[in-house]
Length: 243
Image 1 (cartoon, one colour):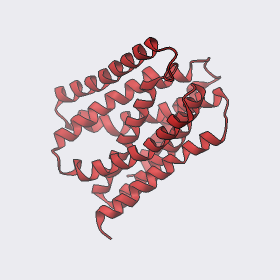
Image 2 (cartoon, helix red, strand yellow):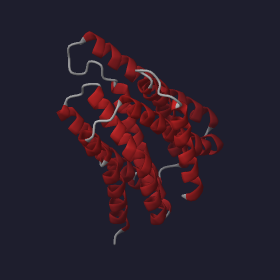
Image 3 (spheres, one colour):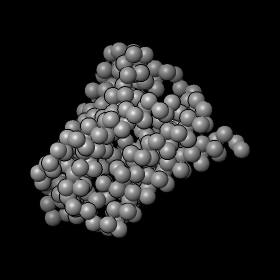
Image 4 (cartoon, rainbow, N blue to C red):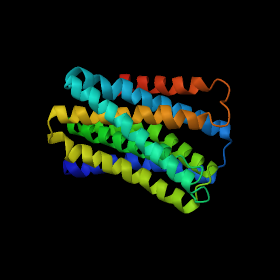
């Protein structure tokens, strides 16, 4: 089978497993404390992705000032997007975006694209590595899709918009994987490391500015920090056994 087709199948597996979290959230109503704990867990995994997989290589092997600047720009982009979204919601309190943290959803979609890119780049090493990454990352992205739709339901997002968001989960993982495989494999190392730093800044700011505040919006559940640390620990274990 053509290598590109194999990568396409691998990315489809990851995207489909991720997507399964969305209909599960539509089917079951879960208490806010469960959603809050799941957001903490997902935030831990994203933090670990940045801290264990993305930034170490960028810092050690990339151009120092470029990496630092790209990291800052990535975080600033999220802050500006969240600020613009908040102003837009405040100006239209009766609209259907009222109460929604658009930055939260945008940040999660970017995270799924980045996860897909990691799968695609891993597939350029060996196809087995790409498959292992696809299955391993799906362990975190499927619950993330679940908690995202559950949060959207709680915030009052219309069902049709939630359906579009669910489809975007699938599209983002597939697009990221194919982008990583087709486009980035032939680019210079410095460019790839700068993009990694940019994405890392964006993701960390998503965690601190949207995911954790959203998790604690109605009062932090008991021992909530354990779920965050659990996400960190699970991803750390994943990096040890999946090469």
